[in-house]
Image (tube, helix red, strand yellow):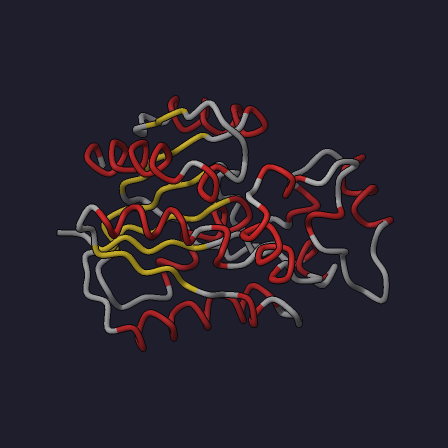
Length: 226
């Protein structure tokens, strides 16, 4: 039986994935939710993130085989996370995220207008918290108690993170995709073209926090087909 390892977005904290972790665990799955918050405050961010992830899994005592599930900004880093482990990784699942772009930086993979918009918000070398990137608060979709926990956890990420090259690691093993929001439809379509199992949930980017049972069902379906 595989163990499911959940990684939250670097722009949020573990509370954004905790409802999904609890839902999966309630069904008997072995689930580990990794807290990556403290590793993303200083450059080099990718190196710190991946090192902390490997240390956390070693300390947890979790046993393989593992399936790594990365939400949003954690998705493109999944091959790097897998490569850092000595444990057997059976597959990667991208949860409403872009697909990996080894050796390329975030700012090289997005619309230049978006990169300029984000860079314009930088103060003292740091981005504002993720919920302040938008005209309307994306956390409004989350219940009030969880919303405040997620807001408190959201870090001010160094702009350097957006310029750093992602790890040049190629993954040739099994992959799957769970789409939560229309924004990542292109990534889901690309995953389908590669022959990956794909599930679509008609919801929003933070559905792992607000509709964990629905997202868990989609994730189980993908896992069963890896």
